[in-house]
Length: 385
Length: 134
Ligand SMILES: [Zn+2]
Image (cartoon, rainbow over all chains, first blue to last red; front, side, top):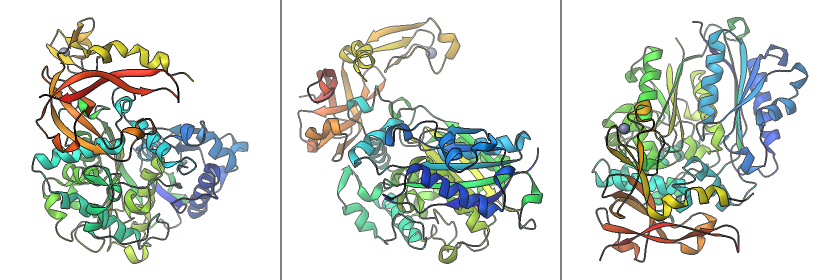
């Protein structure tokens, strides 16, 4: 089947953006991606919109129709469909858009994600985020998503797989990288003690183990049409995209301190791309919670991952750059947008345009987006040949 | 929008810890399921309801400091993954103890309690919580 390329990318700043509405955020990112691609609305065959909980955050459904409408493309009757897979919505939408282009039905597609989270108080946001759990058998009894992450952390530590410092290190790395990224929610650098000693949310996790509540939108233009590529000598390709799922609730899984869906989707994405993990120059993973990030690394990189948190391997200028964007933790976590921003970052890095946080001559990025805590897993390989 | 029918539907299972056993592979599931995830279509028509004893032990836990609006008054509260004597795991609060008493491996037993209420003066919803065995 034919190859699929990334023609253009666009993103808003992430953070508490009180003066911007959901529709304004979405059209800003979409327009930037279209301008970056150098195409016109007439060139777009379809739009895929990623959004996790717009119905609850801003009382809006049919979000893809709204995005298309306020991006000014509705006169062309472009099909616009929303994809929802919890906080993996962005990754899932990217995968659907990729498959649609690869299939041959569409030539050029816009895929955009948006989430407007800060219009509701933070307790309400916590409740909406908990919508990715089982409403009848987890949330009903008082579980929050962070409390589930905390129970994973407690058992993981009890099994002797890692120490507190191993996963407390991951927010430190994300903050360092975010400090060099203009669109980051947070630009402050933190230390490992800051993470461990911050106020507790669900023990042992503190506020610094949690990604923030952010507003933001990101979009990409993807296409099979090489003639549309400005810089056709160095095209950036989506080499593969693969998904896997596990039981919705942690209490139904065979193991509560591993994410088997992550292993499945990342192994499959690597195999479809014809690469092994050694050929991946940098990773963007779903660090919604520090412990979730560590377990993803164990699944993707193997058991060495824990040891690697003790050295400098994961910094942008080291052997296995991790979350060079700043990750969900520090660049921000507008739920349904996260997977698309990961793809934006990979593209910017592969173009060599990431400024201070530029990874040296990367050829392949693996990005991993996750719904809930290991429930939905989408892995995508983006690279150059 | 009323949540009453939605939560009433599961109340029997919540009050009495009723799960379902797949008689094809002899595995007990809680929460109840219509289809066994191991036997899949082989289990159709072979899932039988079964009540659990309420005895279990703590497999993992956390002390929640920043929680849902409905549970604000209880903060800090203990959430746990409980491994039931009969095999299934479930997610529940541990009550009537100080957080320091809760450890992995602690034996607990189920008790019927008020879990939350719908709205400010609304309908009270009951379900299981667990207490530490003396
Ligand atoms: Zn069975």
